[in-house]
Length: 453
Ligand code: SF4
Image (cartoon, rainbow, N blue to C red; front, side, top):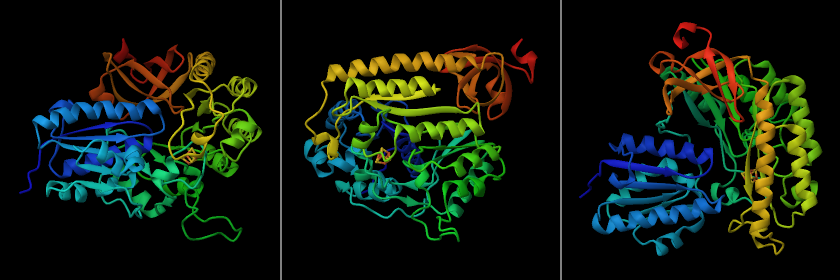
């Protein structure tokens, strides 16, 4: 007999794609009658949505899982699921390692959670990792915010960066149609969402798998065309997109961002290394000169645009001089934010097999040196906000100070100011910036100065 447990908990590791998948799976579970449990120890269904990019994320999954396995010995109707990239990569092996698992599912199967769970509740142990064609999303994701939402526009990745497991685990590129994307955004607008972020592992590849070319021979559906196509959706006030690949980032896209008022002046473009030989070994397909040209072009159109990126230090064979080239790039560009990581070999990727791996202490020394420079440069970049009037879209209460609300500027800086969340949630408020820190700001509401008196 099928018995539905009532409470679920999802722990998410890794990238925004994983977070979006988790929200989609939470939506499915809630449609099935489950309720969110804050504490995983109270849940009847525990799902780990995993990531293989960072080593410690993978190890964390195993240690969290260990605790749940113990619980399962006392509570046999506990349902244990591993989803995401570790699930995809390990497949059956995971079941052999942790036989208490009920379901192991790759990221492409997120939409099938209901189906798979029904089989589990019928007493089966399931591994769903074979590639599938992703059909249109038919589920409504639960979204953690009621103000900002993610919208997947392209799944998978056709690149072959030598450190990355994504192409193995998320499959080839599959773009959703512009009509389906617009319909989803219209629905979000009706539900009261104010900001959307279009998501893809390599969002600049959007549309190249869709039929249709223009007379000039370019793909008919590109990210730029998509931005124009969804720009006027009622209710949506801000549009962002991630993650960009320098190889495909065009001036046409930059022009569209400058032209379209709802598209925020914030660009997340990973460069990974500032050295051409390392970029070549990574198979990234661009040079640091090309990257710099992209940033110059963005700043020519939008001098104040905020720029964030991802960087890896300690890639196999990286010399001190090559690492210095990364430092120079960071110093020259002045990022508003940089996600940094020490290279860690991922199973099934080419670079993991190379014998020129760096020692751990060397990698962490470089990481520290890079992080130090990043925070200095980010603090300098923050200075430009001091005294300025910024539009802040209010998302939530400041969890550390209930008299304050928090939101983001168009440039994606987290900003706090005194205010009542019940009154301001979802509103764009003009805020005079009074305090700047490396990665966040504080200001006062100038639309309603009495609120902050
Ligand atoms: S572009 Fe490269 S790093 Fe990004 S998901 Fe694709 S293979 Fe991985």
